[in-house]
Length: 364
Image 1 (spheres, rainbow, N blue to C red):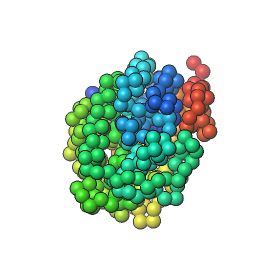
Image 2 (cartoon, helix red, strand yellow; image 1 turned 45 degrees about the horizontal axis):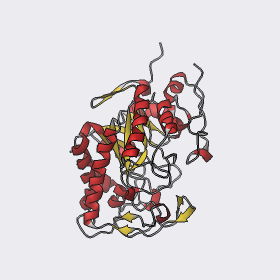
Image 3 (tube, rainbow, N blue to C red; image 1 turned 90 degrees about the vertical axis):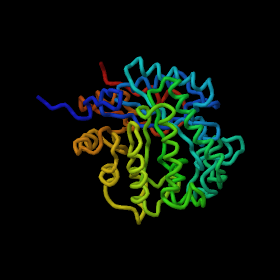
Image 4 (cartoon, rainbow, N blue to C red; image 1 turned 135 degrees about the horizontal axis):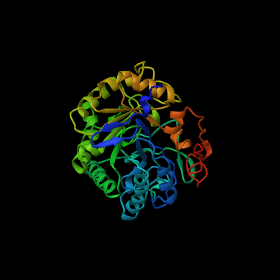
């Protein structure tokens, strides 16, 4: 008798029983309308993928000021909450579990999609050597406006309100997006944060923002409904650390003192070279072993490498992005070792049903 894959085993995470250990990673799809409202297609998209043990929604803007990219969804007005309620209901009707990923893009944005307002950041430092996708095409990044202390406190409050809105919309929990160069990682980063107040300078000060947001999320909705995503060695959006090992050892040790559901550890994308002074080796080995919470490992896993990662015993769950995007029945395909649909790259961001809800399922 063939042994069942660990990927397909159920897993208890806090009060939730996940039907398998496969997580659908958060993926921006840019299918909301100009008011940040998702539609029936989005409900179908997530419901199609409800066989995942856990769905992490695409990143959702916590406020108007959080916006970085056009046609991305929001969660701060009643019409947006009501639209997400239809999504979560569709997922739950299929037996799925879905968390909302909470997003503040910080300097990763452009004024053309922000009503003429510059993006905000810990410090007035622009992203060099890259461009940003806007409603008017690719544009050079702008120098962001440095946040004042009262504004930082307001953003932390916005995260708490967004978490409460997410639960009101029927989400099973929320995940703080503290990876990929967005606002929490900008505060953490030596390349993006040159502040001289309590949010800058030392590693402890730079980690303060992320930890304060996590505490307010836990207070707002309960720790069992909160997760966080981190990407220690991923240099996207001009993020660099003088000593990433010291920074993330501190952050993880502080997170270990908090009561919440999971840490998603995103490995560096193979498309980005490792910075010369960064530690060599596997991020799950380097950083995952430090995590005391349920660990979700992510980035470029296959059926075989995901299973091997679980067998190592550091990670309890594996996140799949583009494979879930192109294969709504991914757990079944893994179980049968069936052929996989390939993602249609031109339709990843923006558009309609094509490349969104028309990927084929295996025959019944």
